[in-house]
Every structure is written in C-alpha cells, then in structure tokens.
Amino acid sequence: MFLSVVEQFRLGHLTTETPHPLTRDLSSLAKTNLKKGVEILKEVDREMLNILSQKSSCLKDLWEAVEETRERNGRIFLVGCGATGRLSLALETLWRQENPKSDQLVSFMAGGDIALISSIEKFEDYPEYGARQLKDLKFGKNDLLIACTEGGETPFVIGATEEAARISKFPPFFLYCNPDQELTKIQRSQDVLSNPQIKKVNLTTGPMALAGSTRMQASTILMAFVGISLWASDYSDIDKRLVDLRELFDATDPTFLIPFIEKESDHYEKGGHILYQCSQQLGITVLTDTTERSPTFSLWPFEPVQAAKQVASLCYLYFSDSPNAETAWEQLLGRAPRTLEWQELEGIANTKQLLKYDFGKDLIVRRSQLLEKEAAIFVVKEEESGVFFQIGESQFIHDYGQDLLSKHLMLKMHLNLLSTLIMGRMNRYEGNIMTWVRPSNLKLIDRTIRYAQILLERKELQFDYEFLVRRLFEIKNSVSKDQSLVLALVSACSKKD
Image (cartoon, rainbow, N blue to C red; front, side, top):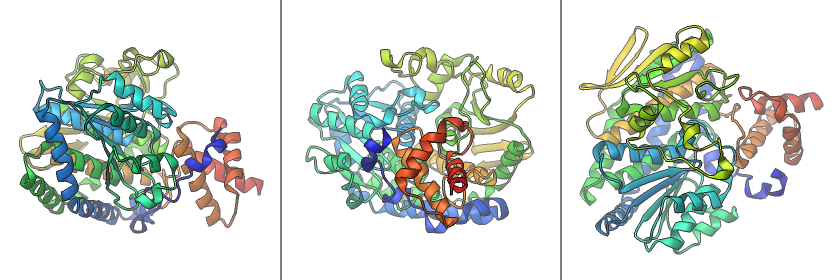
C-alpha cells in the first residue's frame, strides 16, 4: 500500500526533515558534556526566535483577521495534528484560564482530545477526517480557521483547511514551516499554496535540533505566532510581545536543568519510573512534552486504567487534587473533553476510552501496584515567585514572568530540551537522527526508511529505497513497540548483505 503512494510521502527533501549542522554530535554531548548540549539547543531555539521576530507584518495580518472575526461574533478555530494538534489544544487551554466563560476559541486535533495521549494510527493521513471533525464542531460562515502543520503537507490539516475555505466567508490561514519551493513537489501542498481562498504564512525555521522532531522549533514558532495573534491588543502590542519574548529568552540560562536531566535519566537507567506532579495551570504543557516522548523515541505510551497486559510508561502526568478521570481532564483542558463518537472508531476515540486515562489522585496508588514500587516524583508547579522544579534533593525556581503565553512557551522549550537530552543519555537517537521513531503513519514510514538509509550509508552499504520499504514491512510486526525499527532494519539489511 505504501509503495502505491510513495511519491507523495517521500519527504526527505523537506528542510524540517534534514539534520541540523549544530547538533550533529548531540547524542554524544548528552552523555559527556551536558552544558554544551544545553547551550547548543538554546542556540537552535534562538535561530527560531530570530525568524519569529521577522514575521511582524504577517502576525498583524492574522491579528486583523482574528479581530474582525470577534467583531462579527464569529469563533476562532485552531487545528493541527500530532505536535501542532497539541499546541492548538494548549492555546485554547491557556485562553480559557484567562477567559473561563468564553467559547469563542475552539481547538481540535486529529483523533480528538484523546490524541493528546494516545495517537490514532494513520488518522492524519486522511484529509476527509479533517473536514469531518471541522463540521462536527459546527464550523460556520462567520468563523475563522487557523491551521497549523509543521511540514506543510499533513493531509488531515489540509482537508480541514480546504473545507473551511468552502464554508466560511473568512479565508482560513494555513501556517507551515518548510520553503514553498520544496512543498510544491507534493501535490496536496501545491493545491493549498495555489488556492486563492486560503491565506498562507510561511514560518520556515530551518532544520530541527533533532532531525524531523517538529515537536521542537517548528511547533514552538507556530504556537508563538498564533498565540501572539490571539493575545495582542493592537499592532504595538504585537511588536512589544515579540521583543519581550526574545528578551526573556536571552535572560534565561537553561543550564539549571542539568541536575534534573541527570537525575531523571539515572532513575530510568536503574529501572525506575517518574510521576510528573504539576499544578493545573502548567498541566497542558507538561502533558504535551511527556506524551510526545512516546512516538519520538519509541517509549511505551501512557497506559490506560486496568488495561490488559499493560506496560507502565516511563513517566506519567499526576494531578494530586483531582478526584477522578473526568475532573482531571476538565482541569487539564479548562472544559469538557471533545471526543469522536464515530461508529468506525468505537472503542478508540470516544469518551469512554478517553476516561480510561486517569491522571487524578488515584494514579499514585495504581502505579505503585502496577510497578510493585513507588515512582519518583518530579514536581513542576506554579508558585508566586515562579515555576518550581524539584526531583529528589534538586530544586529550582525559575521566574518566567507574568505573561501567560510567554511563560508556557519558555516552559515548553525547557521541557523539550530536558526530554531530548534525557533520551540522548538513554541512546534513543544517534547524533541528531531519530533512530527510534515509531512509523505510525505514512510520513513516519518514509522517515524510518530514510534514517535507516543514512545509517547504512555510514556503514558503506547501499540499498534501494523500494527494497528498504519491502524489507521494513517484512520485519516490522516482529519488532516490539519499545524497540527501534530503524535499527532493526539496519541490522536486517546488514545481515542480508
């Protein structure tokens, strides 16, 4: 099946898929020189913020559309898939923290809210699902859609965007992070870029710190861009927010994370587990980073309550004052969860399935029973003087300022940095190549093939792309979910040679 559509999913030419020259030794630095590893990752984020600061005029265009929509009592919809879906839900959550009674901002991601924790395989490959979810939410002619796709080629997001262009009198905004000339080689992207009914915003940031890991710089610039358009009061406030975010970033020294990186990774190496205990105000950002580790590094995902033969994930989110799953989800999102009650997704994405993921107060007892020992606690909570971090005897309070959006953007970058270096210490990538990527959709199948090809070439072994595709499908069912398909494919081809 993959070979029949391969030309539309061979994405190695995209900038977001290529290795960043600054981070080629990242996996080694994670083990031998954490300070340098932290500094390099901060430098890549600085490059991203440099790009953002150049987008003031585009930001003002989006801000104007947002304001016009509000004036006409329309709603603003945010859509994404995977990392961009999570940033869309995060922005609505932050909005509701300041506007708890407002339904003017609506977010959705491929698969519904459950995809925050448990992605639905191949869901993002279908543009009709994007259109269907949009219509299920009663998107209307006075509403505005802001669509985010890191690569600029995600079928689900494109489907939602094209449907919005047909329904609304407001042209939807399509935000993406690859150069136009690269995307025009992909038919679905070309269709969007050439559609006069869709407004396009190019936010190319360059290669990711970890090749293909768009949960990092691409999703950060998208979250900042959309967030500023939602929170800014006028043109001058847009410029001020851009300057303030950059000044906050420059004033921050993320090396405070080094003892936390060391302690968490050492805990895992000894067979331990971590519960991230966080305040509800920070929950969505902590959840996003911890759940994105699973598909990026082939870790076991958060386990549902009472699942048969469940394997405990290395970490889990924990709200100590939430009495049950329903309350925990509402505290996390600031609203009732939105699920897909579709017949073809019965038992996969509906409310009953979502509520199996309970990060309320009973989690600590349940995990202790599952693991037959207590998990370590990593506290990330809001205090009057800043965000408080603690694991074991290590603790730190970081002042991210009072602006809600900037606080979460900085926390996002710091947690991305922390988890990436932890995974480097655990050998979950090589250099800056995602050798443990999980191929749960067509784009990730291509990524698995390409990264295996890079490693084989380093061994001076040459294999045809089509051959590697066929070999991957021969072995993939025999490789456990928490094992590397990239490395398994390299091993299988090395032996065959």
